[in-house]
Amino acid sequence: MVRLVPGGCQSLNCLERRRDVDAPLTLLGWANIIESGVEANPAQGEASVRAQRVTAIYPGSFDPPTNGHLDLIERGSKIFDQLVVAILRNPEKKESLFTIEERVEMLREVTRGCSNVEVESFNGLLVDYAVRRQARVILRGLRAISDYENEMNMALMNRKLDPNLETVFMMPAVAYTFLSSRLVREVVQLGGDIRGLVPPIVEERLRTKV
Ligand SMILES: Nc1ncnc2c1ncn2[C@@H]1O[C@H](COP(=O)(O)OP(=O)(O)OP(=O)(O)O)[C@@H](O)[C@H]1O
Ligand SMILES: [Mg+2]
Image (cartoon, rainbow, N blue to C red; front, top):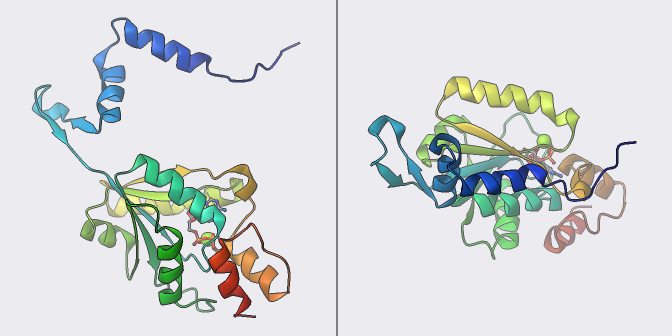
């Protein structure tokens, strides 16, 4: 019988051990360099090490912002130097519940404690906006397999449009894997309870919409 041992960190232990011995710089040296926030440029040789800040854009409709979005923002803000939460002025999504300005306000309010997070809206192509913001990363959430196909198509299209832009996916806490703005809108409109699924200030504003 195979017994599952909690804390499956064997490979991590192995990585730690290998760091002590003569690990090849190509793999583990890079990890150390990235950890220290400095990136080496192989094209310019080992001596050229330059500091580089990484800005990521987290785009979406956020209509309304949910605790799933906040979970992703918190995770993203820990690994990127700057995280820009960018609300797309999306002509395809005509039936919005909150105006863009209301969404910007709510997201600014709930991310006030995160010094490296900013919130704004944008028009047009995400890749053009990323260039304007000097961002190299797009952050997206993956809740379930159902997100995968659409997200993969978007990521590959964005890569085609700008090969320098990398899409990074993060998974939320399990409790939020079923949560979407669309479901929140539907539940609220039918009088259901959405406590714990959205931040309290969003909950208050949702009450004024029904
Ligand atoms: N609960 C969640 N957990 C993790 N990621 C999420 C969650 N909800 C949304 N996201 C991610 O946030 C980004 C922006 O999504 P979006 O604004 O479309 O939210 P949504 O909940 O999918 O809204 P809608 O239902 O209106 O499409 C996407 O990458 C999406 O995968
Ligand atoms: Mg969506």
